[in-house]
Image (cartoon, rainbow, N blue to C red; front, side):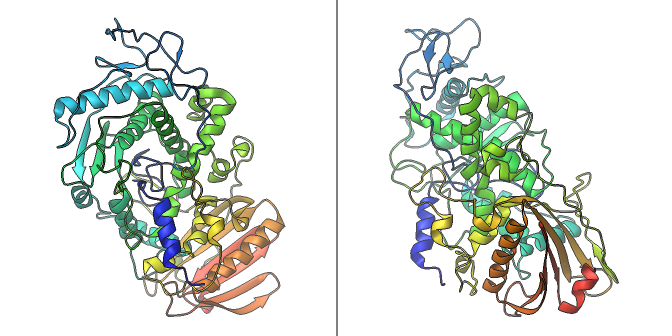
Amino acid sequence: MRTSAALALALAVLLAGCGAPLSSADGGPSQAGTAGPTTEPGTGTSTGTDEATTSAETDTSTDSATTGSGTAGETTAGATGDLADPESDRLGWENGLWYNESLSIDNSDGLNASERAAVVNRTMARIEVVRQLEYNETIPVSIISRSEYQNRAGSGDVPAPFRTFDNTKFEAMFMVGEDRDSLAVQEQNRGSSVLGFFSPTEDSIVVISDSETPRLNASTLAHELTHALQDQQFDLTDDPSSTRETYNARNGLVEGEANFVQRRYEERFDDSWEIPGQPGSEGEDSGGNASSSQLHYGIYFLEFFPYNTGPGFVESLYEQGGWDAVNAAHENFPASTEQVIYPGLYEEDAPRNVTIEDSSSGEWERVRPRSGPGQARPPYAVLGQSALSSMFAYTLFDAQSGSTYNQSAVVQPGQILDQGSDSSPVNYDLPATRGWDGDKMFVYRNAGGNENETGYVWKLAWDSQENATQFAAGYEDVLSHWGGNEVSESGTTSTWVIEEASPFADAIRVEVDGETVTITNAPTVEELDAVHGD
């Protein structure tokens, strides 16, 4: 099936106003919790929460006044009718401003230094009211243009093994072919879509403006200030993520919470200092999402996951135990993206530790990635259910990235996109990825022949043989979609060759063994056993 322009337009509309995550290419992020705002898609803003039921909002508060979106337990102490400054710091008051004080702001030509400080301080006070946590210090906020951000960004000089590893991993997900550089494609996506970020290593926020007159976007500010509060209370630099799966799972909480808080903030407070028509205002594209021709939708789906699905996970925690349950989760991150997709599995269904014996022969050897001095990474990738679902979803939009292979309906638009949802427009719960229980991938290179020749072994564990068989069938549909032809079959093992005209031209073997599926890739059928023999 050829994807219609209307479908791409529908996705662009769904993702309007969202930004993309500012994370390093796969594996561990270079900065924890640095994504832009959320509503989303993008990465920086989450998309998937159904908002909590709210009650009537009050303009003033007493020691027991309901504050956030009106749920029990959110209280603000100390704001008086004359808004006098308290004797000591407290929730809802920051640097001389109460959360319900009015501001006199002229944002027609941007905010001057004093206006920006007032907006930041009052927004911090309001975040305290919603999140029921206290800031320890003020966070500096700067505004830069998109072009300046794009000039700053770049994958830079990364070690060759890391680039090889990343390129092969994104090739395995059928997102970036051998003719392109995966790090550059990811950087282009971020440059086009990110709205802002908080840097926990520098304790600062950067907001990206698409207007000629740099202006501060209220939703972006609220989202990033939530990250700053998380860092002060839970230390975002303490990041255990080492693979794409653990990164997306962790950010299901970090970004999910930031989007959840942002939405509750927007329900309660009206940031009237924003002017109509400015980026991020109602009626105008925030610029946080590029045109359909600029975005690589496969990578966008992959990085959008925490912002789309994380808020629902956080809402589930909140409904069970209030903010105390969310606080506790910062000490016990979700173990998998599966747990974020299905919150009932949190703390209940740990992923399996998949093992793969190195049975390579000849000149083939495993690639051991390292992104820089002292930055050790595991010698394998774990991709998880969010990545698998993104791989299937991309087949609907690959034509937007210059491919000519979008001829088959691997998934249907209604399985991926929910055009009736503003909070979580992308669905990562697909039949072919349901029942994921763990995976691991090792990347190989031909050390003695053509050094550009790579391969991989990817083993996936499933809850049942039925789940494994269902994934294998769907995966073979993906192979066919990208120009693959089955050349042999023996029992539960099939061998495929992807035609030379495809960006993923290679040989691939798919083996189903009970509850596991093992995928082996090599340049030719003859080299499959050299990469991974019996």
